[in-house]
Image (cartoon, rainbow, N blue to C red):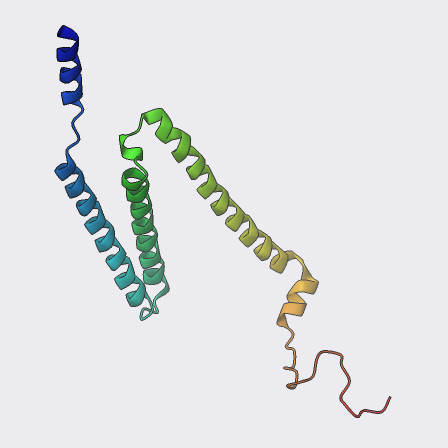
Length: 149
């Protein structure tokens, strides 16, 4: 008889609170919706701004909001919020390395472009010469129809 009492005691500690879970999902959905609407408003506002510094600032805000949404989605809908710290680190650390790789490759490509323009005089000369726009239907180096060879 004592065995069943212990079993009932154990099962009562793991009751699932359906109402609290529903409220949490609604709260997270509302937060994600508000963040998305703010991002959209910033994006539409960005199209009308011509000052370069302000454009970069708004783009930075949009990136911050995007990261916040990503953390909410991973934390709540992929259930990492309730996981162990080591499990979270096995996912977050590679993700951060991936983001670092993207930033490093973009910076390296930009550096290559700038150095090529600076130190390759032939490339600089080629980039400054204007090329005539080809007439419709003609390809570069192609002869006109009816032309005698």
